Image (cartoon, rainbow, N blue to C red):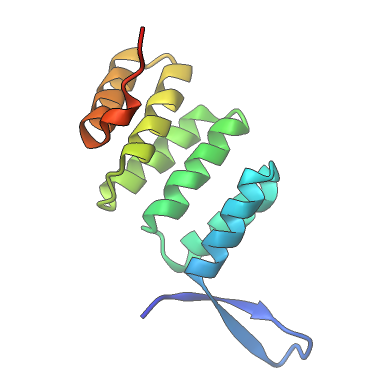
Length: 125
Protein backbone atom coordinates (compact mmCIF):
# COMPACT_ATOMS: atom_id res chain seq x y z
CA UNK A 1 0.00 0.00 0.00
CA UNK A 2 1.35 3.40 -0.95
CA UNK A 3 2.11 5.83 1.82
CA UNK A 4 0.24 9.09 1.73
CA UNK A 5 0.59 12.64 2.94
CA UNK A 6 -2.20 14.46 4.64
CA UNK A 7 -3.83 17.50 3.10
CA UNK A 8 -6.34 19.58 5.00
CA UNK A 9 -9.66 20.05 3.21
CA UNK A 10 -12.27 22.74 3.91
CA UNK A 11 -13.22 21.37 7.31
CA UNK A 12 -9.98 21.39 9.34
CA UNK A 13 -11.19 18.29 11.21
CA UNK A 14 -11.27 16.29 7.97
CA UNK A 15 -8.06 15.11 6.42
CA UNK A 16 -7.87 13.50 3.00
CA UNK A 17 -4.82 11.40 2.15
CA UNK A 18 -2.84 12.33 -0.95
CA UNK A 19 -0.90 9.43 -2.47
CA UNK A 20 2.82 9.94 -3.00
CA UNK A 21 2.32 9.19 -6.69
CA UNK A 22 -0.03 12.17 -6.97
CA UNK A 23 2.36 14.38 -5.01
CA UNK A 24 5.21 13.30 -7.30
CA UNK A 25 3.18 14.09 -10.41
CA UNK A 26 2.41 17.55 -9.02
CA UNK A 27 6.04 18.09 -8.03
CA UNK A 28 7.30 17.10 -11.47
CA UNK A 29 4.79 19.42 -13.15
CA UNK A 30 5.94 22.30 -10.94
CA UNK A 31 9.57 21.40 -11.58
CA UNK A 32 9.12 21.26 -15.36
CA UNK A 33 7.31 24.60 -15.27
CA UNK A 34 10.31 26.15 -13.53
CA UNK A 35 8.69 26.46 -10.10
CA UNK A 36 11.67 24.86 -8.37
CA UNK A 37 10.87 26.00 -4.83
CA UNK A 38 7.31 24.68 -5.03
CA UNK A 39 8.56 21.39 -6.45
CA UNK A 40 11.11 21.09 -3.64
CA UNK A 41 8.35 21.55 -1.07
CA UNK A 42 6.39 18.69 -2.62
CA UNK A 43 9.47 16.45 -2.85
CA UNK A 44 10.12 17.14 0.84
CA UNK A 45 6.55 16.17 1.67
CA UNK A 46 7.01 12.84 -0.13
CA UNK A 47 10.34 12.24 1.62
CA UNK A 48 8.76 12.96 4.99
CA UNK A 49 6.41 10.00 4.34
CA UNK A 50 8.99 7.80 2.62
CA UNK A 51 12.63 8.87 3.17
CA UNK A 52 13.90 6.38 0.58
CA UNK A 53 11.54 7.36 -2.27
CA UNK A 54 14.00 7.13 -5.16
CA UNK A 55 12.28 9.53 -7.55
CA UNK A 56 11.65 12.16 -4.89
CA UNK A 57 15.28 11.92 -3.79
CA UNK A 58 16.57 12.13 -7.35
CA UNK A 59 14.42 15.03 -8.49
CA UNK A 60 14.92 16.86 -5.21
CA UNK A 61 18.63 16.54 -5.93
CA UNK A 62 18.13 17.86 -9.44
CA UNK A 63 16.19 20.81 -8.01
CA UNK A 64 19.00 21.45 -5.52
CA UNK A 65 21.48 21.51 -8.41
CA UNK A 66 19.28 23.94 -10.32
CA UNK A 67 19.19 26.11 -7.20
CA UNK A 68 22.98 26.12 -7.00
CA UNK A 69 23.46 23.61 -4.18
CA UNK A 70 25.51 20.89 -5.85
CA UNK A 71 26.70 19.32 -2.59
CA UNK A 72 23.10 18.69 -1.52
CA UNK A 73 22.24 17.54 -5.04
CA UNK A 74 24.98 14.91 -4.99
CA UNK A 75 23.96 13.70 -1.54
CA UNK A 76 20.30 13.33 -2.49
CA UNK A 77 21.06 11.63 -5.79
CA UNK A 78 23.43 9.19 -4.10
CA UNK A 79 20.64 8.32 -1.64
CA UNK A 80 18.33 7.70 -4.62
CA UNK A 81 20.80 5.18 -6.03
CA UNK A 82 21.15 3.55 -2.60
CA UNK A 83 17.39 3.00 -2.59
CA UNK A 84 17.81 0.66 -5.54
CA UNK A 85 16.66 2.67 -8.55
CA UNK A 86 19.24 2.80 -11.33
CA UNK A 87 17.79 4.38 -14.47
CA UNK A 88 19.73 5.81 -17.38
CA UNK A 89 18.03 9.18 -16.89
CA UNK A 90 19.07 9.28 -13.25
CA UNK A 91 22.68 8.48 -14.12
CA UNK A 92 22.66 11.07 -16.91
CA UNK A 93 21.39 13.78 -14.55
CA UNK A 94 23.85 12.68 -11.88
CA UNK A 95 26.74 12.89 -14.35
CA UNK A 96 25.80 16.48 -15.18
CA UNK A 97 25.66 17.46 -11.50
CA UNK A 98 29.02 15.81 -10.86
CA UNK A 99 30.55 17.55 -13.87
CA UNK A 100 29.23 20.92 -12.72
CA UNK A 101 30.77 20.20 -9.32
CA UNK A 102 34.18 19.45 -10.79
CA UNK A 103 34.04 15.70 -10.06
CA UNK A 104 35.01 14.75 -13.60
CA UNK A 105 36.08 11.15 -12.95
CA UNK A 106 32.86 10.41 -11.10
CA UNK A 107 30.87 12.23 -13.79
CA UNK A 108 32.41 10.04 -16.48
CA UNK A 109 31.62 6.92 -14.47
CA UNK A 110 27.97 7.97 -14.05
CA UNK A 111 27.74 8.83 -17.74
CA UNK A 112 29.12 5.41 -18.67
CA UNK A 113 26.43 3.80 -16.51
CA UNK A 114 23.77 5.85 -18.29
CA UNK A 115 25.10 4.72 -21.67
CA UNK A 116 25.25 1.08 -20.54
CA UNK A 117 21.57 1.25 -19.56
CA UNK A 118 20.48 3.28 -22.60
CA UNK A 119 22.91 3.63 -25.50
CA UNK A 120 20.85 6.59 -26.75
CA UNK A 121 22.98 8.73 -24.43
CA UNK A 122 26.04 8.24 -26.63
CA UNK A 123 26.84 11.71 -27.97
CA UNK A 124 28.65 12.14 -31.28
CA UNK A 125 31.87 14.10 -31.07
